[in-house]
Image (cartoon, rainbow, N blue to C red):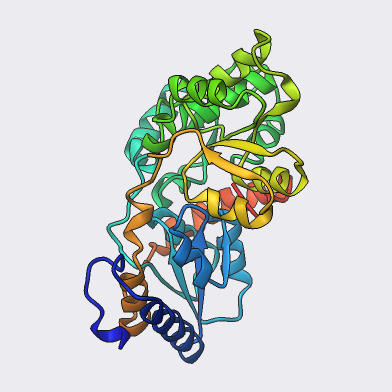
Length: 337
């Protein structure tokens, strides 16, 4: 039976045990009025058993719109916080409350308050990959799919403090040409680890492949430089959010596509277009925090109603205003970040 499967790994499960696990997860979700949300970077088996798969903000908006009383968010802690911010009346669970985020951890609310004090009157734009407390000190949030649009909505004479991802910030500044934009020097350790060397080696091994690069990647600037230098044709290079990657996967007729983002995304791309070979630029680009949501922990969350995520109501109210300010500018990508 599923209850006796050994922890902490399901690597040795038989097909029958996997099916028993899936059946038990779906049964408990139905009985306990739970909607299961899985981030794009989760392991394939977690994605496949979920009700919805997508980026953190799209899933949080689905959580708010869901009729279910409980949300089980297979992702990292700040994502579940965002779901709680947008759906304060619902119970929000995560498989492992210790699943943090290296990017969100690069700035605290105290650090942001100090930065704001150095730049009075500046507009604070925070990537949704931040804690609830940081969102509470923010004027407007953004995703990687609408960061350019958000920054362009701010009057040209207003200084902008953009945080916390330096690579996404550099991408936005490059596209907008905005000089009065300060960028926090944070990074996602997984995306930063997809290096220009990785990119160059992958392109040399597959010179005819299309290239999809997430703007959080440390190699995004190198990809654009290779285009400007004539090493790659511009029509084959795309700097995209994960939602944009899914859209491109559905459109492309390329035989091979190189993908620079967390490797969990490959599962969604391959499902969207089974005839194209999607290959990682760096096969080691796996987020250990995302992978903390194991099959065993997902089942435990359903059985025991843990780990619950809470957000201080006053913090949540301020953070909700920053998210709603973003939504008022333009609807974020419905499927991916």
